[in-house]
Length: 456
Image (cartoon, rainbow, N blue to C red; front, side):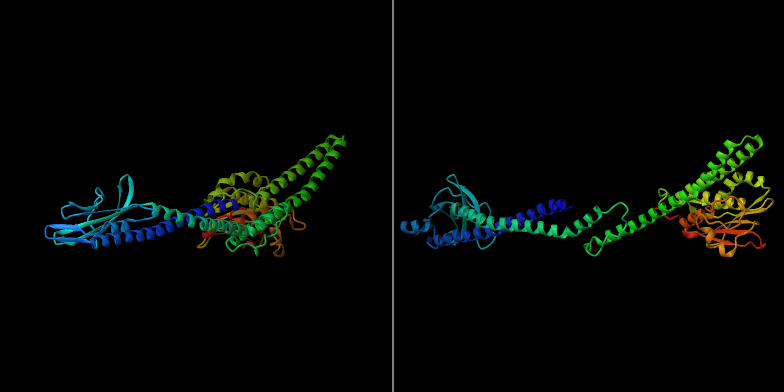
């Protein structure tokens, strides 16, 4: 960053100094030329004062000695010429260039020309006489002017160079001093370990950079939350999977030692059931990992009707309901929201699976969707054993199972429902149905804010 700033600031600063020096040079040169032009004009006026004019005749009454004094100069050659009203030559040096334009004010004109192979500066004066206007032109070569230009340029070059060097030094020091806090921040971040998610200190950061540091700290906080959740999930998964795998291995060892065919078949059935529970646990853990904050890439919310979502997956649960002779019914009313279809489908699957697992054989389950003024509702009601009021908040946490509850669940279904609902700004409520038996799980989606949170 420092190199980039210097590469932009120093050339711009030098360009500005050069333009300033050129402007100062032109202004000083203009004043000097103006002074020399006035001197030429004074000479022309002195010559015009010596012109004698009578009707029909005009002469210059200027002795040769006076002409030598007037035209004497240490550096330049000075010439003059007088022309009559009809541009007839009266006196002076023939061939001086006449004025290319009429004077705009005070009957005077200044212009450049060439005489005897040299560049000259000429002052022209129009002097009225009885015979008409007479042109008096005085010219001089440009030696003094060029010498003055060199002196001005040399006089400005040294201080301007010193000023440029001082300005570059100040810019170099200023940029380095200004970026020092950023270098400290960079070093503080570069020396951190990958596990250090502490906020970056904002106190020493420049005012202009503090918003960026604030956002960086917010990102670190979100990332720390994601890593903490992942570590907790890995720890929980390791603990939860270890037990069923150990049980499965023990059952396999027992089956290998079994010689009675009937007992072997019973052992294999137990192994099959244990493998099914382990597979279910693994699926639930993977689902939980996906719905955790940062567990999947951000997806764009889509319009979705909860009723259509239920209809599209209803057939998947019929075999399990028929196996337990459970009356699985649906009361569906259009309930449009905005969300992520795969996550909402997973939430619905966990709600129905949870009821099917814990509802007794011959029970009844009703899946219901409805639309209120400010919310869309997804409800799953059953007449199973129900959830005690003091356990309703706990069952939304991971791996929590009600003591003595039937079924072979792993305590993750409602926790997954809670995570997915939270990502859609929805709330999960558990109550007792109006019949007084079983449980009613209600997911309430605010209609105006059902967009899932962006995973980080």
